[in-house]
Structure formats: C-alpha cells, structure tokens
Amino acid sequence: ALIRTLDLRRPIYRPTACYGHFGRDDLDLPWEKTDKASILKTEALGK
Image 1 (cartoon, rainbow, N blue to C red):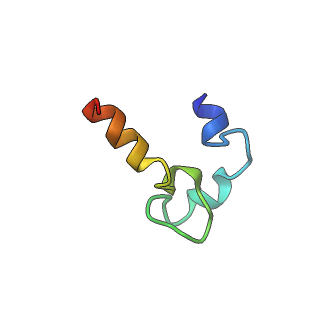
Image 2 (tube, rainbow, N blue to C red):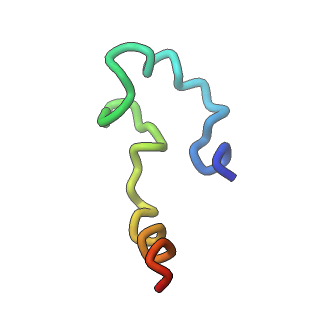
C-alpha cells in the first residue's frame, strides 16, 4: 500500500540526491503531501 500511495516505483530519486529531499515543493514529492493529515489524525486519536 505504501509503494502505491507514495508512488515509489516512479524514478524520482536522482533529483532528490541534490539539495536534499525534505521541504521541497519543486519536485512534487508524494511524501511532502499533507492531504491525508486529517484522516491520520482522526484515526490516531480513535475518533
């Protein structure tokens, strides 16, 4: 599920090797998306 959700088979790793990969908005990195944050928060709090 994580491979599919984060699209990890897409060849995006070479651009992330330079200048790091956290906090970048120029590469459209799937692990930088926060669209599921409210769902995860709800599930974590058990509500």
